Length: 111
Length: 111
Image (cartoon, rainbow over all chains, first blue to last red; front, side, top):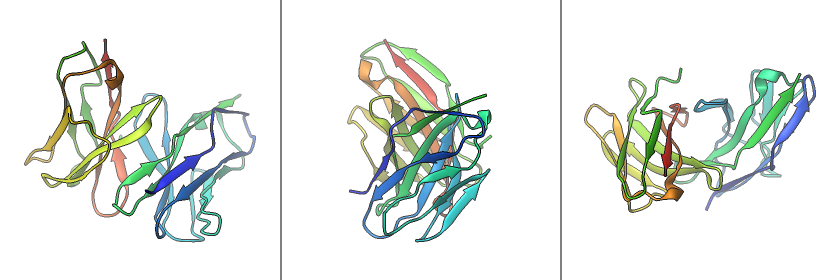
C-alpha cells in the first residue's frame, strides 16, 4: 500500500540554522502531499501542502517541493526559530482517500 | 483553535475496562476521523465516518468501535482494555477537499 518514510529524529539545531527534514513516499498515482506540525500538547496542524508534481507548498517560512522523479517532499526552512520546536509529520492522501502519515520527526531549536 | 473538540483530555483506567472518547467536529464538517498515536506505532488511522456512515477502516482492533451520531459528533469506544492501548487518541474532521483539522487529543492511560 501507499506509505511515507521520514528521516529519523530527533533533530537539534541552533536558532537561525537551516533545516531539512527528508520525506519520501511510495504510492500509486500522484497523491497530494502534506506536512503537518504538532506543537507540545496540541493536535496536528496543517503546515503546507502540494497537490501535483513540481508544486511548491510554503507557509511560515517553510517550503517543500513535490518531486515526482525522486518521490520526495522534503521540508526546508532557511532560518529556524525556537518557536519552530515541534514534531513534523509528512503525509500523503492515498488511493483510498485517507491520510497516511510518516513516523514524525522531533525538532528542537536551541537559543 | 482547530474547532474540533475532544473530551476528556485525560483518561486513566484499568485493564479490562471500557471507555468512551468523544469528538465534536468543526461546524459544517461531515467527516470524522479517529487516529491513535503511540511511541512505537506512530500515528495510525483507525476509522472514518461521513455523515453518520462508516466510510473507511484502518488498523482498528475488534475491541474498538465507533459511531457518528445525527448531530455529527462521534464516539470511539474502547473495550477490554490492555496496557498496550495506552496512547493519545486524536479525532480530526474534514469537509470538502483533503484538509483535516485535528483536536487536541485524549490521552488514555491503562494501568
